[in-house]
Image 1 (tube, one colour):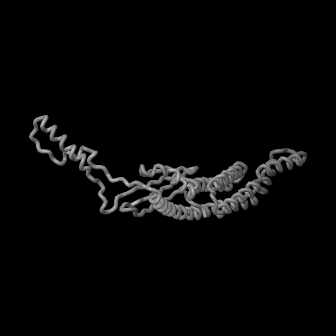
Image 2: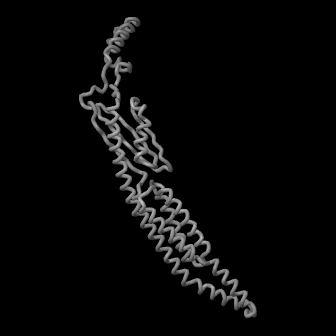
Image 3: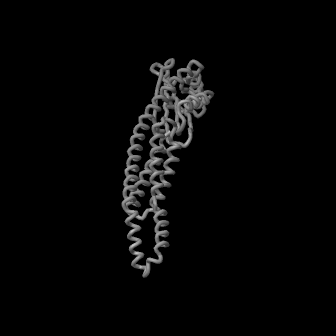
Length: 290
């Protein structure tokens, strides 16, 4: 099963009155690129956290955040009483110095940032095990979403491959029915142009044979069908197929271009244009495949 590179996962757990939340987002990227937003007390664990991601994901731009939120009953913004007393005394001295009779009010203290220090959670190794479990759960949720999206991509790509295969079959039928007629008409026109065509018969047959060979698209159709089979087999392989599928698309596009350049039939040219359009749509889709 193919896997999309786009996904989202989130998980949370409780730890000593705090709530640990892990959130993971992934986007298209040629390689695996991991960016972290984690508490300062987890900075020393950055490498281990990235290793957890690398063990589960192979490609994509990954944005991962771990947050710690106080639970119910935890004092989220505790007041530093010692600092508060210092601030009160300082304001009294200022009032006395400027000889002000203004009363000291609560809002006067709001500008003192040191008075309000949010409680920080310090992690130890036992706590980090809980963090890893939470992160793994979020990553598993992300992977499920990426697999679901991959399934939808798989179905869409198969439909487009079938459209291309139908166009190739049409081109083969159209080519086999028109190539002989085209060169027979060309022979007739040449006979009208040339006064004595009999003495040029051998040369004429040779030149027409060369033209027919140059206009022959049988090999291109065979190779294009082979690429289509390789494409569908690769989709079924369950491996990391994004780069391989992109290469196959390049080969298919090359064959479709050759068919268009060699063709002498407008319907075949139009069909080859449709093939190239579908290949471009496929290439856009596979940019999102891991």
